[in-house]
Amino acid sequence: MNERSSVSTRGSRRAPGPGALRAINYGIGFVRDPFAVLNNSTHRYGTIVRFGIGDRCVHLIHQPEHVQHVLLDNNRNYEKSSPFGLLKLLFGRGLLFNEGSSWFSQRRLLQPSFQPKQVAARADGITHVIGSTVDAWPRADADNINIEDDMTHLARRIIGELLFGMELPNELDVILESEDSKFAFLLGNVPLTPQNITYKAAMRRVDKTVYGIIAERRASDNESVDMLSMLMSAVDKDSGECMDDTQLRDEIVTLLFSGFDTTSRTLTWVFHALAQNPEVEAALHQELETVLQGRAPHVNDLPNLPYTQMLVKETMRMFPANAIIGRRAKADDVIDGHAIPAGSYLTISPYLAQHSAKIWDKPEHFDPLRFAPEREKTIGKFDYYPFGAGPRQCIGKGLAMMTIPLAVAMIAQRYRFTSLPGFVVEHDIKVTFQSRRGIRAKRHLRPAYDA
Ligand code: HEM
Image (cartoon, rainbow, N blue to C red; front, side):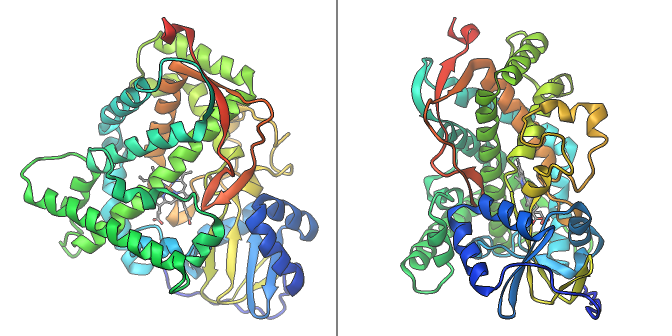
């Protein structure tokens, strides 16, 4: 998977892009308004944009063939990188940032826990947690709430159930919070800054808690069926070895973060999109009422809830939780005649592809029917990839595509959200795609639930 495959860059040219000063401006602009930088720079320079300061450079790409080259055809030449390097510190050798043979054997070890059969086996537990969480929300209209708070609370309970079969201890909050400013996040990488000292102290608390849970589990005879138990008993088929506590800690922390943040953001955007598009909301309610007739959904209902699933897919097109994906070239490469020097960074943007007017008809129009079965077949693999693509594609895709539609169905049976007049939703990337100040809205009880 990770051997280098150097390509001669002779005859290739530098990709177009801003000079050093303007590149710095774009960098500063990215912190303030990342989507303006993504949109404006591609509009100005084209499908590959080079932001360079001296020898250091980042290439922004989104054209499907270019992305296919990096994530699939020549993936061996590209290693993971994240502008949010602090995450690497937090996740250690967990799957998300692991590389080479270590990544490969970990992926093989984790994969069985994410097989459809295992995912379906967790459905009842997850449905129960969603139901009990939403049942505990106030049975009254609310004039001004943050949709994000509701969805964060729910996602937290789902991930706790999934990984440990229990509520998450508060000590793990630091993993779940990407609320800090981007500056704080970036400064967290720099040794001895106050941010770095704070993060390190928080990480010590995380370690103590996660190692504590692992130790407790090892000491108990309780036959749990959660993911921690599955990971503890997973055996590498070549070496015959299980994961040691450090690796288990790294995987647990990685799964907590990757599963929680993406799920809560996606659910938030679903209900924002419904508030903005009453005809979509009406179609969803009609499907839920016809198929479920007021009862709670079961995993086996999902095939009969196609509109609910299309709604989730369209939400992930418009608001992909991972609006950008990072990579770093290990050896020289050429993309479409442009040199990609060894060591340079790549920012791949599903967001740009998924909003491209060259790929999508009226891309800014929210329309779940784009994902109706016949139409979905015509969507190219690299036109739409909210879960990434190639060997590093999201391991939790099946789980997410079960959990999120179930949660959407159960929430929408009970509540609807309407936009708060005057509240402006500002798109931002703080690790994942979110709204800068949350999404304030009114929450209404559905009549059937009110009765
Ligand atoms: C809406 C939900 C989700 C979205 C949009 C999403 C998106 C993604 C994307 C785009 C990647 C690829 C990143 C890259 O190529 O650099 C990824 C990887 C990953 N995701 Fe997800 N994810 C979601 C849910 C989950 C869940 C529920 C879990 C587990 C509980 C999870 C665990 C992971 C892990 C471990 C990786 C790294 C896989 C590897 O490198 O082998 N994700 N996810």
